[in-house]
Length: 164
Image (cartoon, rainbow, N blue to C red; front, side, top):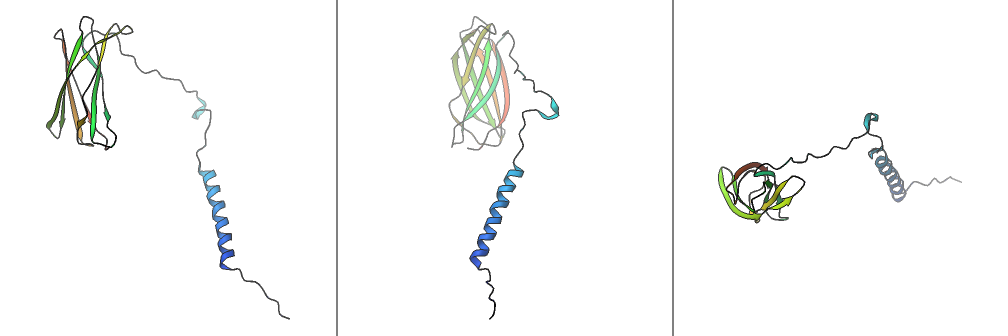
Protein backbone atom coordinates (compact mmCIF):
# COMPACT_ATOMS: atom_id res chain seq x y z
CA UNK A 1 0.00 0.00 0.00
CA UNK A 2 1.45 3.23 -1.06
CA UNK A 3 0.59 6.51 0.44
CA UNK A 4 -0.62 9.14 -1.96
CA UNK A 5 0.12 12.76 -1.28
CA UNK A 6 -2.04 15.34 -2.89
CA UNK A 7 -0.14 18.00 -4.77
CA UNK A 8 -1.57 21.53 -4.53
CA UNK A 9 -3.39 22.50 -7.69
CA UNK A 10 -2.97 25.74 -9.53
CA UNK A 11 -6.43 26.87 -8.39
CA UNK A 12 -5.62 26.31 -4.73
CA UNK A 13 -2.31 28.18 -5.10
CA UNK A 14 -4.16 31.10 -6.73
CA UNK A 15 -6.59 31.32 -3.81
CA UNK A 16 -3.80 31.32 -1.26
CA UNK A 17 -1.78 33.99 -3.09
CA UNK A 18 -4.92 36.09 -3.66
CA UNK A 19 -5.77 35.95 0.05
CA UNK A 20 -2.24 37.02 1.02
CA UNK A 21 -2.41 39.86 -1.49
CA UNK A 22 -5.74 41.13 -0.14
CA UNK A 23 -4.42 41.08 3.44
CA UNK A 24 -1.27 42.94 2.35
CA UNK A 25 -3.25 45.68 0.55
CA UNK A 26 -5.60 46.21 3.49
CA UNK A 27 -2.74 46.29 6.00
CA UNK A 28 -0.72 48.65 3.77
CA UNK A 29 -3.67 51.02 3.45
CA UNK A 30 -4.17 51.04 7.19
CA UNK A 31 -0.52 51.72 8.01
CA UNK A 32 0.02 54.28 5.26
CA UNK A 33 -3.05 56.43 5.83
CA UNK A 34 -2.27 59.83 7.40
CA UNK A 35 -2.75 60.09 11.11
CA UNK A 36 -5.12 62.85 12.20
CA UNK A 37 -4.95 64.61 15.48
CA UNK A 38 -7.11 67.22 17.16
CA UNK A 39 -3.99 68.81 18.64
CA UNK A 40 -1.74 70.89 16.33
CA UNK A 41 1.90 69.83 16.08
CA UNK A 42 4.07 71.02 18.93
CA UNK A 43 1.18 71.21 21.38
CA UNK A 44 0.32 74.77 20.30
CA UNK A 45 -3.19 75.93 19.66
CA UNK A 46 -4.01 77.47 16.31
CA UNK A 47 -5.04 81.11 16.40
CA UNK A 48 -7.36 82.32 13.65
CA UNK A 49 -6.03 85.14 11.52
CA UNK A 50 -8.37 87.72 10.10
CA UNK A 51 -7.95 88.85 6.53
CA UNK A 52 -7.00 92.51 6.26
CA UNK A 53 -9.90 94.90 5.81
CA UNK A 54 -9.29 97.74 3.41
CA UNK A 55 -9.12 101.10 5.14
CA UNK A 56 -11.25 104.19 4.71
CA UNK A 57 -11.90 105.30 1.14
CA UNK A 58 -9.92 108.43 0.32
CA UNK A 59 -9.73 108.39 -3.48
CA UNK A 60 -10.56 106.42 -6.63
CA UNK A 61 -8.61 103.15 -6.43
CA UNK A 62 -8.35 99.48 -7.40
CA UNK A 63 -8.69 97.06 -4.51
CA UNK A 64 -8.64 93.64 -6.19
CA UNK A 65 -8.01 92.29 -9.69
CA UNK A 66 -8.93 88.71 -10.61
CA UNK A 67 -10.14 86.44 -13.43
CA UNK A 68 -12.80 83.77 -13.81
CA UNK A 69 -12.25 81.07 -16.46
CA UNK A 70 -15.03 79.79 -18.71
CA UNK A 71 -14.98 76.04 -18.09
CA UNK A 72 -13.92 74.05 -21.14
CA UNK A 73 -12.84 77.08 -23.21
CA UNK A 74 -9.79 79.37 -23.35
CA UNK A 75 -12.00 82.32 -22.38
CA UNK A 76 -11.70 84.42 -19.25
CA UNK A 77 -13.68 87.16 -17.51
CA UNK A 78 -11.31 89.80 -16.12
CA UNK A 79 -12.56 91.82 -13.15
CA UNK A 80 -11.53 94.66 -10.87
CA UNK A 81 -13.13 95.75 -7.62
CA UNK A 82 -12.39 99.18 -6.24
CA UNK A 83 -13.57 102.22 -4.36
CA UNK A 84 -14.24 105.93 -4.86
CA UNK A 85 -15.14 108.88 -2.68
CA UNK A 86 -18.67 110.21 -2.28
CA UNK A 87 -19.92 112.53 -5.00
CA UNK A 88 -19.20 110.30 -7.98
CA UNK A 89 -21.96 108.19 -9.50
CA UNK A 90 -20.19 105.94 -12.03
CA UNK A 91 -16.76 104.61 -13.00
CA UNK A 92 -15.44 103.73 -16.46
CA UNK A 93 -12.95 100.86 -16.50
CA UNK A 94 -10.73 100.48 -19.56
CA UNK A 95 -9.05 97.06 -19.51
CA UNK A 96 -6.04 96.42 -21.77
CA UNK A 97 -4.73 92.86 -22.05
CA UNK A 98 -1.20 92.15 -23.29
CA UNK A 99 0.23 88.72 -24.17
CA UNK A 100 3.64 88.11 -25.75
CA UNK A 101 4.26 91.90 -25.86
CA UNK A 102 1.14 92.46 -28.03
CA UNK A 103 -2.15 94.06 -27.00
CA UNK A 104 -4.70 91.30 -27.60
CA UNK A 105 -7.83 92.94 -26.17
CA UNK A 106 -9.14 96.29 -24.96
CA UNK A 107 -12.52 96.56 -23.28
CA UNK A 108 -14.31 99.60 -21.84
CA UNK A 109 -17.07 99.12 -19.26
CA UNK A 110 -19.01 101.77 -17.28
CA UNK A 111 -20.57 100.70 -13.97
CA UNK A 112 -22.52 102.52 -11.23
CA UNK A 113 -21.08 103.04 -7.76
CA UNK A 114 -22.79 101.67 -4.65
CA UNK A 115 -22.51 102.85 -1.05
CA UNK A 116 -20.26 101.15 1.48
CA UNK A 117 -20.96 102.56 4.95
CA UNK A 118 -18.28 100.39 6.56
CA UNK A 119 -15.52 102.12 4.62
CA UNK A 120 -17.15 105.54 4.25
CA UNK A 121 -17.42 105.81 0.48
CA UNK A 122 -18.52 104.05 -2.67
CA UNK A 123 -17.48 100.74 -4.24
CA UNK A 124 -17.69 99.22 -7.72
CA UNK A 125 -16.94 96.06 -9.71
CA UNK A 126 -16.05 96.04 -13.41
CA UNK A 127 -15.94 92.82 -15.45
CA UNK A 128 -15.10 92.33 -19.10
CA UNK A 129 -17.08 90.05 -21.37
CA UNK A 130 -15.48 86.61 -21.85
CA UNK A 131 -12.19 87.23 -23.66
CA UNK A 132 -10.48 84.53 -25.70
CA UNK A 133 -6.88 84.46 -24.42
CA UNK A 134 -3.94 82.06 -24.62
CA UNK A 135 -3.58 80.09 -21.37
CA UNK A 136 -0.36 79.48 -19.36
CA UNK A 137 1.60 82.42 -20.77
CA UNK A 138 2.19 85.65 -18.85
CA UNK A 139 -0.86 87.86 -19.31
CA UNK A 140 -0.54 91.50 -18.28
CA UNK A 141 -3.81 93.22 -17.40
CA UNK A 142 -3.74 97.03 -17.17
CA UNK A 143 -6.84 98.85 -15.97
CA UNK A 144 -7.48 102.57 -16.18
CA UNK A 145 -10.28 103.90 -13.98
CA UNK A 146 -12.06 107.22 -14.52
CA UNK A 147 -15.09 108.46 -12.60
CA UNK A 148 -17.64 111.06 -13.67
CA UNK A 149 -15.77 113.74 -11.68
CA UNK A 150 -12.64 113.15 -13.86
CA UNK A 151 -10.64 111.44 -11.09
CA UNK A 152 -8.37 108.73 -12.51
CA UNK A 153 -6.43 105.75 -11.22
CA UNK A 154 -4.58 102.81 -12.76
CA UNK A 155 -3.70 99.31 -11.69
CA UNK A 156 -1.87 96.45 -13.30
CA UNK A 157 -1.32 92.78 -12.61
CA UNK A 158 0.22 89.73 -14.24
CA UNK A 159 -1.70 86.46 -14.53
CA UNK A 160 -0.76 82.97 -15.76
CA UNK A 161 -4.20 81.85 -16.92
CA UNK A 162 -5.02 78.16 -16.42
CA UNK A 163 -5.62 75.73 -19.27
CA UNK A 164 -9.28 74.92 -19.91
